[in-house]
Image (cartoon, rainbow, N blue to C red):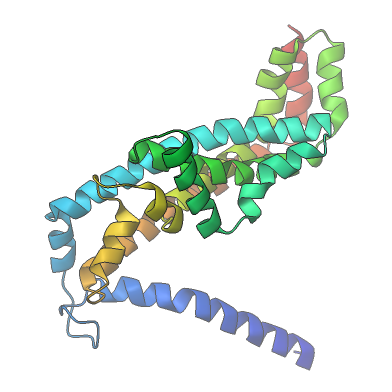
Length: 271
């Protein structure tokens, strides 16, 4: 192996170690038979049993899942439409409006949304305000992914569907949507992930009432990081890995169909 390649592989190994070793430690210490994470004592499932008997933590997890699912649905729907509009109409103002929440610091976005809810709308903060706030900054991520997918497509596919007599809705439903579905799924996955673990915007827009998982975990680690926190973190990582695997499998199966599918769907759209 050449010296340059050796340095490159070494640097890559250090970066991946820095990223994944803390996650591995979190998973391992969720099975540690000790309340303190100072040293490994022994294997136990006690902290998972304690987690599932913790009513407040389960309520916080349920609320976070509801918020993440609603955010993912709304952001995917609006972000897909935004990505299509940016790709089709080429207006300079559209990317600025859609992508600004992505580039804006979260603390600034959280304060801005908080002031808008309280001073302009006189809106009561709660789960609905969190969903609206999360959807606001997730739309841009979905639009970026959908737009990138559209830019890599051959425009003649859509023109062929229209030339064969398909209406705009038929072209979208039978040609455009199946082709961009991997990007839509990826955008939904990213929205779900960003929403379920967001702390800053959630902190500013949650109000007083129902517990939310990131805020609940933050409250628990003020004293110490207990194995119960490690247990809920491990379950969140497992959920994320399952969703990533499903999205990757869907994308690979979609791409394996080859270029025959666009021609077939273009003919179906004309019927």
